Image (tube, rainbow, N blue to C red):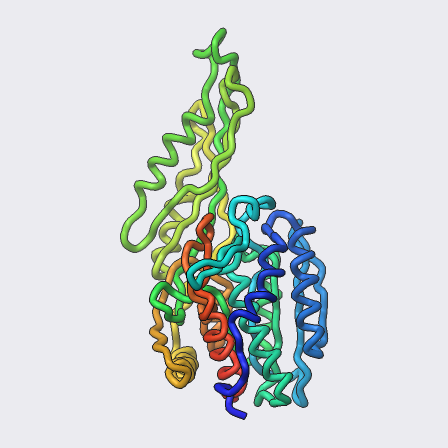
Length: 376
């Protein structure tokens, strides 16, 4: 049987995906992430996969590793690397409920990246049901912390990738429906200002505001952005009482660069901002980093196979290097042939408009099945 003959049905897939989407799984709620891992582990176990539950660490949820039955199980094969955490806090379903309208489906995490993960699983389900054998053994690894830079499971992903010949990352498709064959570098920084407290009305002049200093620093940092390296502040925490001059403020910075040298320079510039000379101390600490992934000949060869399969299905699949960051940064930078963003089409990821194009579920599941059955 040819992979194009497998009976993929987007509406049937959507019914299964709905269960996943309605299991909210924000990164910083490990119990909720673990409930999502339970659902994925069950669906994978139903395929006959050997399931390993890997305990979480650093305050994050667990990971699930599943190895599909194969005569060469344990030998280098195909790794599907995906995350099941989302940026949406518990309760988002009240604002962004699962709903269907005009060929689209909405819900928290449905595009990033539960839809793509589910499509990959459906590809394997139809292959198993048809009694087909993949040339290479397939491993699926679902992790809990990608949305915060993968601080807890980077080593797990890299070690698993090193055991395999190819890595497939079903992150959302690019806006033009394409895939990603390279990613820009990402670095995170933690900022802290330490001021001097005082009563905001009785003794305002005696205080030194950590908030005011952080505000000035944020403007300076974001002004450092250029074509080759950008800086943006996305998190800001400070204050508890309006009648107190703040003594502490924290913020987080995300930096993106197209080349590793540009990121290295950006890191150097950020760390040079540490300053204890004034009335308010300014501290900069480097957080997690995703390396630049530049496509090599092996990744481009994998892309050509992917493009050919897409053409056989009936759609065009361009490719590009992209920002955003994913766990493909790690595997691609290791030199392992990696194809990223082969997941569902949609828009609005990380917002209350996050949705997918429903018919892309069958389209991307069929693409995944083609890859599983063709890669050697």
